[in-house]
Image 1 (cartoon, one colour):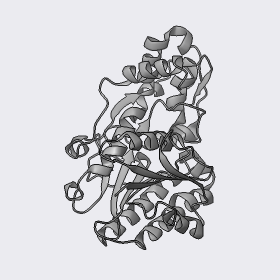
Image 2: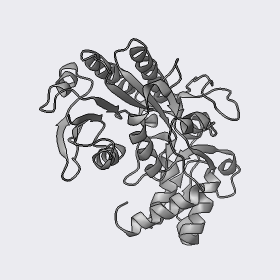
Image 3: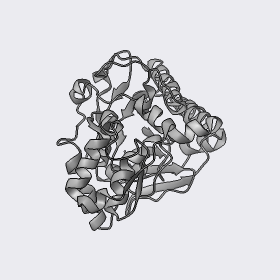
Length: 335
């Protein structure tokens, strides 16, 4: 029997990396990929794939994903969504994509309830948190989002948990750290600058830092973020498929993926070490109160004990190894 995996948001950067990783995963032999996005995705070279351009807020198009030549998937990665600043600026679009389309996908999956249930891996975000928070977030910390993106993700999390409780799916909810360094063009995520202030300077281009107005701004040290590298994030996406269902907490399928804490100043210090003063001088400052408010509402430290006990992995060494790897990728022409 082949392993059949449906990936939504497959045309995105993470979707592309995940598709390639699944093809290379020894625990997912003979994988058949159903790759879906609002624009037609690209299949990994040599893979057994169906690529589909679809509007996931349209029920007939969602239902059709379960009727391809590969049949009903045994695993679904729900990666699609409207990012944080995009959701904040266009509330209706955010609700349609981050909530309504996820429910349509859950309902379509429910029609094929079986034993064992279809694995439904939903990528969420630390943006579900807000308000007064403990110094270190634990699995029992209550999520109270302060932005439309976090609200949408939390709403869909609750549905994934409920569908799992009823035995309709085998849900796995991954709350992602902010991923740095993202290659390509800047996204509309509020946190996009955390990659931009590394990516653009290492490519010889100017980058805007929306935190503070100069290198001496105290906000650079006080604003901290919970981060993970792309390589570690993709490893954890694949691991999520293989965690035995009984290992999760009985009352929730939420897992905050492991990460590490770094300030904006830590990032710039790593840029200076790796790229030199020339790279650092390409970072320009233009304080954005909306951006700063949203990012500041997110927690910057988590207890990694639970996710590590499930087999997930974490970056070691802070920002510098990540920046060095990205510089290598730039020099190799792959970033």
